[in-house]
Length: 275
Image (cartoon, rainbow, N blue to C red; front, side, top):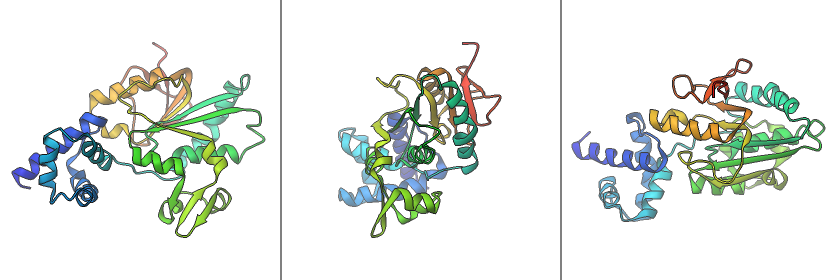
């Protein structure tokens, strides 16, 4: 890699860190280069070196936003990490049902939701168990930093590839309509989720507190300081007896004193009792 390429990737890494808190690892450089090529074509920019020069000027906020969104890892799928998701929709939600049976009110935040498969998977789960959740007020709030990902999430429209990843055929046929090569989520499930743009480096604004927060496979891309900041924001947004779900490869151990590992549910975390 040339010195110019190294400098360009450092510029891109700083741009990504500044706007999202995420780190641009060396093993992601080639993915980032591929992700930025559509921006080059769209703006008639000849190459990545010229893009780096334009971004260095810090004068085109829209171009910077496009690049940040392109560099963010939006990897997701329906019912992602099926064993962990089964734990969530089984024993964890059973526990929440018992805790909230007096109020029949449940608030869930799907943080860094990308194109919406995670919160919609939850919405389909609740819809598949109408007797258990009859009379409940269930609010699923989903956020992401990417406006393009949120646009697709709100629309609930997915490619054949996206629809096949993790989604059981029976649920696909029940909750989606096919439009040529794409699949449109039916309105009742779309209405069950509200979407909003939010940077997890910022405190949750005006949303109150949640009984359950899902923030999966996002913390791994943050530096230590930003990870601690995000975990602090999540702790502030969680009820005293609520639960935080992280990705299978993530942990709060050594990262924050705001959370402690659940003794009952592996991969879930509770507010630390000492606080």
